[in-house]
Image 1: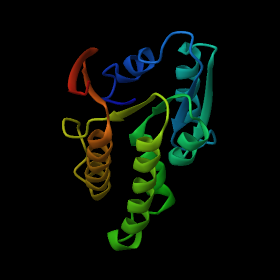
Image 2: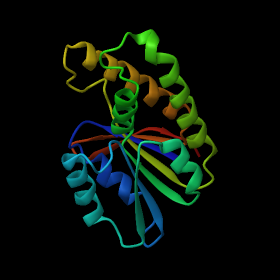
Image 3: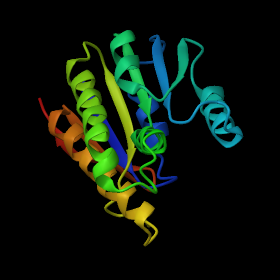
Image 4: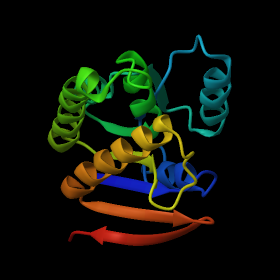
Length: 177
């Protein structure tokens, strides 16, 4: 089962995603983004870790596809947006011309979507809904919003469920039997 949980910043999407993993079940929490060398990121991961059950393992990674393949049980991938930011950073996409980094990013997205689609257990991915979000009117803002929108569409196309969380309220967008 693949579930994509999307919403705006502070919408409650991560808390709802956590509730989708059956209580008491071991799970892997993939903190997808920069490494713990970033103090703000380390605080974010620690805050999430404090509220999760002791049966969960936290894995910090920027290689979500590999991590999904290495952890076949229940997985919570949080967050697709921070994963994308790490990829764009690694490819120097913020300043480089698009043709310099776009094919490499496309390959990483293909790998993530394949690992997501092939995952044998429950996998819940949390992402920001950029269609409703405030995105800076800069090149970097457009690059991020355009690419995250496309990644979200690709994940949603292969998801069993897509949920939109707005102000803590969960709205089903796609729910396959």
